[in-house]
Image (tube, rainbow, N blue to C red; front, side):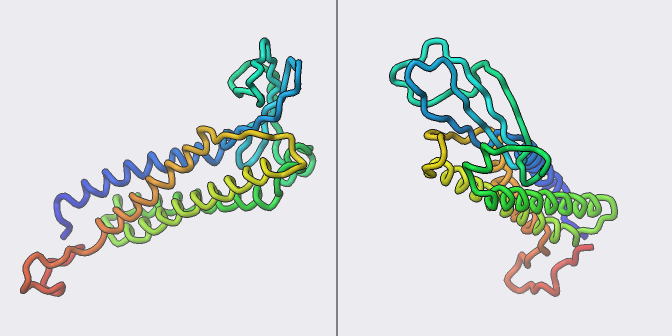
Length: 227
């Protein structure tokens, strides 16, 4: 029989995991992972900044009213301007996104998106296991659920690192006009999702483990079994 406090711990941990899953979905479907800014030419009245995610790139022509002499890059991206988004060419062959095809590595983008999909899949499987354990009183399903959540956290942080390397190579490349970059809120959501899913996945595993003997003379076989 399970200890009376175990279901409460599981539900509290699962509540935090749901927050992590929400952050994971927000990071995967949005396109504010990184913001790129080109260099500003002298006496210019407009410039084109960009932000992108796993699936598409958005450019924004920003109109500069009184550019500062010390300002060398375009932005911030929150300034008003003409906004245009398009999916990456390698995901939608019929569309064109030459700006991204030239300025970054296609393999990085595909890898980051594929790993993020694995993360979502692991999170969904973990949630199914937890819900089944609630309904059928099958506590043994908590162990695979904890591993699925841990794998989901590891996958999304790997996707974050692949994206970070992609941005770094864009800035370092001589073929690009980008001189400045910053990570945006989608990137922060992915990092937060990793922390919550990984930590809570480990916590769920510890909760699901059998109770250890409380007395020195008590063995695991003597301990009260869990049903």
